[in-house]
Image 1 (cartoon, rainbow, N blue to C red):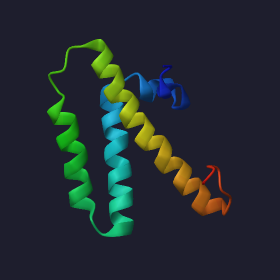
Image 2: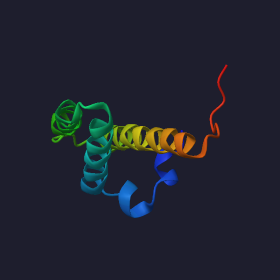
Image 3: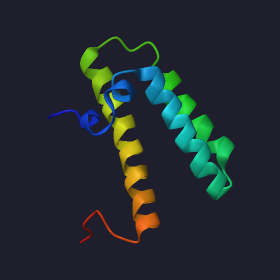
Image 4: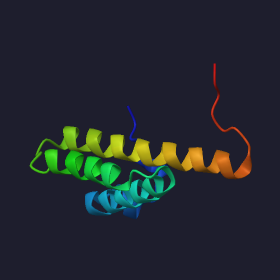
Length: 91
């Protein structure tokens, strides 16, 4: 399966630290809107800390893809809200 990270800028997708920081930024943004900032930030930190010592390249790629998927989904959600247009198909 191809990597989802191609949808993100390469300087973000290829660097786990930048990906982590962007996930934290999104968590803060969502948290401010939903009044649960600390919970979301702690969830992001916990997930990254849990896999800090991972050495398997395939597993690392999957984890980065999962984080990228979350960022992409949030960006699509925000774009739909701002434009009033649906980008995803619902059944």
